[in-house]
Length: 477
Image (cartoon, rainbow, N blue to C red):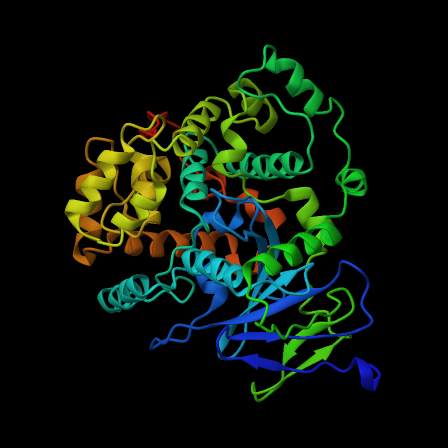
């Protein structure tokens, strides 16, 4: 397949737990760097598809799940978002004894950048010791109702800010619109990174900026991609410069790179060694230029804080949510909202800390009971079930409960109280099982089908003898 000089060599770095490869005849900008993460040691084997495809957040941009190769791809930050918004496209796929992390479009990344990427992956997949403990305990109390598709891990975002914004996007709208708003925010981030004009908070006429930013006749994705500049070469030079400043000159990094367009990395049968194959289509990764340059990462607080509300609302079709998102972003940038403090406090999963966190979130505009409960679930508190019209529907269809906003908390406690403190996980296991019964295996679903998961498609197929309007049960977002 390759000449002797082009054969790949496997090298293990015990300190960084990295695996790096080299293929000398590769096109410029198609390199990748790969390292490994240890899988959690638990009774049941860790399954990446089960950990990822466990909550609607995995369907929201910039996440991209490939059901054929069982690979999660999305941009991840290289540094703390408060200091830089530099990000690279990263793909996660499972090996027999580890999680492979492939960073696209670079020959290498520094140990510090590896650690930052690992921390984001640990957060997304809930791989911390505290989350591992919660998974084990939930499986124990829920042993009578096992769900092979839901193992107790609820997928979340690499940052708390992204979780909080996405919780806002869940409020008072159907799922297809939630998906489109998240997609628009990531497209906006790409445009901001590429230096396109934008309406800032202090501009005299934000309407002009918005109209200049959004074409009246949208170009096709293909045309927009062709016009977008390629970041691979510039980003590589930037990383090399950062590495020179960050790493001591005596530190030798053995690194290898390979063409992601011509080759794929697959385990052998025994799992002890690995080979490169170019003729296998089951593990193809997304084209870096097509995916990353067009979609972008999820915007950071710094990137959003200076935008005008009218521009953001129009560009991303956020409606009233634009004001909530901007107030959150500006509060973080100005230091009024301390996300690191919230995450540190959440390490103590106690009722007192839950109340304390809730009290800190409550003054933030847009964070009503439903949104707060979702954010706190993302932080690892599972004893409260966020409820909305979907919860009402589920209780009616699955438990034959005709519930109202006045009785729903009592009804939820009656059904799920026995799983304390993991009531939400028990409820979510039922919800996920219901979705898969109705729509098929979610981890095998193509992304174009995500918008099918709507309330109208979940109604009972039985014909009602008499139609009767019932008052809607809207959540108090």
